[in-house]
Image 1 (cartoon, helix red, strand yellow):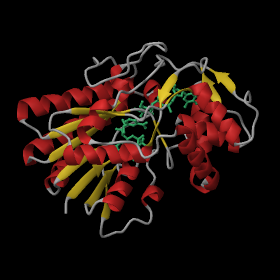
Image 2 (cartoon, rainbow, N blue to C red):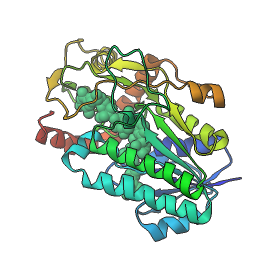
Image 3 (cartoon, protein in one colour):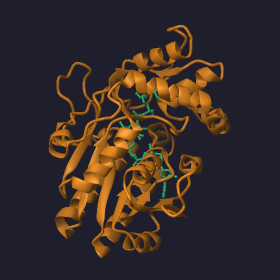
Image 4 (cartoon, rainbow, N blue to C red):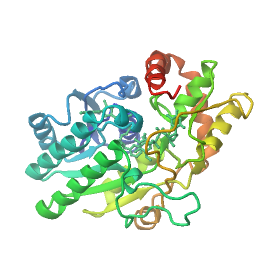
Length: 333
Ligand code: NAD
Ligand code: DAU
């Protein structure tokens, strides 16, 4: 039996990871979460209270993090400000949570000798040309574009320095774009699905030619557990499910599933610094640790996700208006 601290465990991916732990391990879990706008306690509903408990707090609160990390066998660090568009409007919280928060986790892991897994993103590598035959690997140089991805890159560098200089027992994973249930309506897939369900149209930045490499959130969660269990200390593992699609292709799939014409979308203002393409080569994770995605078919996973949003209007509707108001202020509505 392991005691695992999950920072950001009330968020989209953190809650999927907590559900994975409850279903597939005998770990006892503590969630540390500040409960920002992005958190959802409903995503943790129904989990057994003897297995999962919640501490509401800030990952940048050093004394709190030190105490909690000292009480656990491992910490999986997901707490972050996660949305690129928000980082372009107000970068401050991204520096504070993503960099200072990671520093606090590292200092606590150093003091207590606690095993750490740090959850990062493929965005630290910047972007690829559409026709580049290469995909990102663990050897790709860092080249982040946005305040969000630069803050995540900064956090990754701190983790590597704490491993090398202080012997902290840590691994890092960098994953591509997640989709699935409980994702906030600010993100691409839920935004477009809920726009259509509200009688509006999908809003696509620029030309819509940008490519993202989609993975189901449950596959990301399973991969993180695999790395925590069997990953080599000090190593980085890329997580991806070969799901490259242009944004226009994803919008077309959403429109078709919801019975709307293929051209029923709007092109809106481009995102500043918009990365063109992400693509993950996950060979190391697959060959070394034997992980494979349980949702290899993006079309199938997306259809189930769309249906989930159709069935969970009560969950997302209260957040829709404020989210769209923020997009309107940025000229992206
Ligand atoms: P999310 O925004 O849905 O959830 C983030 C969670 O962190 C929320 O519950 C929020 O309340 C919490 N949080 C924010 N600031 C905090 C603070 N100061 N202290 C404590 N808790 C705080 O994000 P997500 O999409 O679930 O992403 C989780 C992690 O995975 C992030 O580190 C992100 O960089 C990484 N990631 C995300 C994706 C993706 O596609 N969404 C892909 C790769 C990596
Ligand atoms: O690659 C991993 C990253 O994926 C994570 O690190 C981030 O936390 C996560 O938010 C995500 O970043 P993106 O910026 O790729 O995701 P987002 O959902 O914001 O946008 C996906 C693509 O869709 C991107 O090319 C921008 C575009 N887009 C987005 C929105 C919200 C639109 O065209 N219209 C929109 O309304």
